[in-house]
Image (cartoon, rainbow, N blue to C red; front, side, top):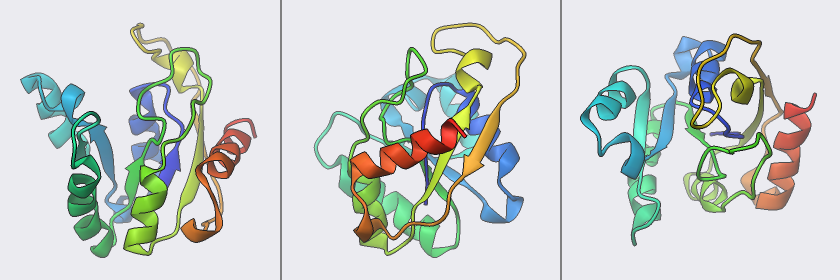
Length: 161
């Protein structure tokens, strides 16, 4: 399971370009944003595999677990942005604990990923600009050996590398 910072819709594009096709990545995506509007739903389901995440309803974790567990069991990479939303200023927000819980429940390692340059290329509520974007991948981590704050610090270190 890959855990990355999130400041742009370009984050997913960078990860799709950086990951080998054999990982067949799927991305946890906000159901209230990506699945409520037909054109966004079409983009989410045709350009990148997505797992709908219900951010504000009860049972959200159970739904994520039900969707992610088969993907992980099939050897697919599941990408989660644990901030829960895109950053407005490029800073990395607090990490929610769902990704850690999911990795523990599915018995899979976490791979931290620091993304840089995506906010400048496509800022939240902004327009596309040309620029370099990078993805730095960390070493796998046993999810039982780390908490959300320490995981966030590893992602920050990779982003700033």
